[in-house]
Image (cartoon, rainbow, N blue to C red; front, side, top):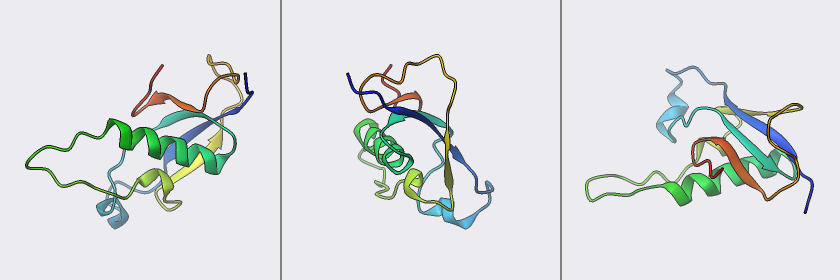
Length: 97
């Protein structure tokens, strides 16, 4: 099984930042991924897989996880999760564990 790194995606923009108009704040997410940029991709893919689009809703295509002005990615050196395993979101929005 592939050994990957753990990353925490953390919102860094203020709640009143106008950039949140492009994409919703999903809170923090803990991700197992190959790199910090891959962690953004993994979180975005999980977010889209969990999206529920209703009759009276508007789909937001942008993901805040990809926006460096909204989210930062930090190494997660200690965690209760092993580094060995699939690329996935471990905690937070769209967690599959």
